[in-house]
Amino acid sequence: MQPVPIRRVGPLKVSGVATAQVLLLVPVVVVLVLVVVSSVLTVVWVGILLLLAVLPLGRLIANAHRRMAATVLGEPVPAPYLPVPPGPLLGLRARALDPATWRDLLWMLWAMTGGFVLSFLVFLLMVAVVTLPLWWYAAVPLMRARSWVDRAILSPGRTEALERRVHDLTASRAVVVDHSAAELRRIERDLHDGPQARLAAVSLSLGLADDLFDSDPDAARKLINEARGTSSTALGELRDVVRGIHPPVLADRGLTGAVSALALDMAVPVELALDVPDRLPAPVESAVYFAVAECLANTAKHARANQSWVTLHHDGRVLRAEVGDDGHGGADLRGGSGLPGVAARLAAFDGILSVSSPVGGPTVVSWEVPCAPSA
Image (cartoon, rainbow, N blue to C red; front, side):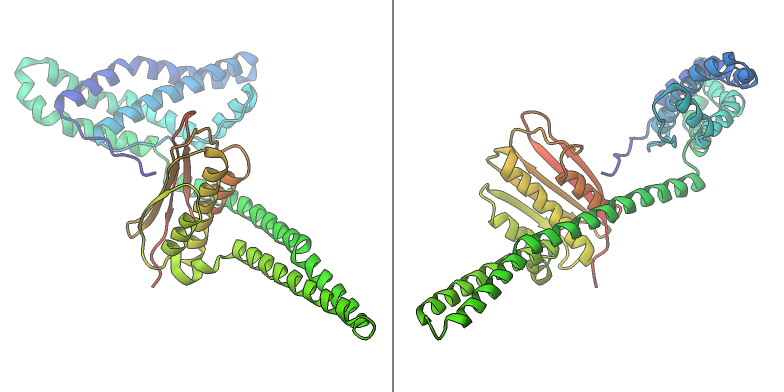
């Protein structure tokens, strides 16, 4: 979901932030000095032990200043850190090789010099009575200037953002490829166990009927009737397989009609709020349709719910969806294969899925997918 913007604040609030930054000067200096000393001492084990403690502390301080910059600027300042693997030595190596760690050290130099001057100036203007009018008008611009620099240094750079984007796309592509391979295996299994076996039975029955036409016409007629019934069953199973690949109702009626058809088949009442264009890109429609179908199937099988709802809204750039129920809750994105499969399918389109399902309910599965309406 889109982050909720933080409200901008006035002189009194930014002065509190400035005071906190002035007080945090000593920890910033201590951490920077310890990092330098520890790096020199890495030739012995003492330096490694110091870095194990100092680098996480440096991130705590940098994150505190990110939050303060977000408070002043009125918008989030994300942390660009890469995931840290378990284990002290692996974690130390990951932090040392993370470009964000070096950005933190660069920021500490700024925080000790120009950043401290701006924050201390705001603090002085606030505590000196004769400068209160100047403080009232200058506090916010001064602190916004510092926060802009803090954000520029502490936020992900363009290169880091692109690298992370490539990493995320590579991971999502691998998941989608695995999911596609699993889908192909499922289709092959469904065809082998269902229509293929029935069509073989039809062929056998027709062959036997052909042999019995002259000697026992009644038995031949019975075999033909059985073959007709078996072929009808095979046709229905083929339709089910095709529907699992790309539902005909989706191609004929679009996403709104297809989701409405899903709701009609539910035993639990489903409230619909569908506000989407007539047509979206076909791959996105298919992914969202199967996401809704999986969520409603989970509701029917596991939730013991009395009511369910589906919300789809497209604002011209992003399709946002929500499927919920008033059941007993307990759904987990990490368990089973249904919701993780949905997340993998949506990730191929930069989709983001989240699950809220406390014990006792309700369960709400929401996601958003960037897409433009089809012409």
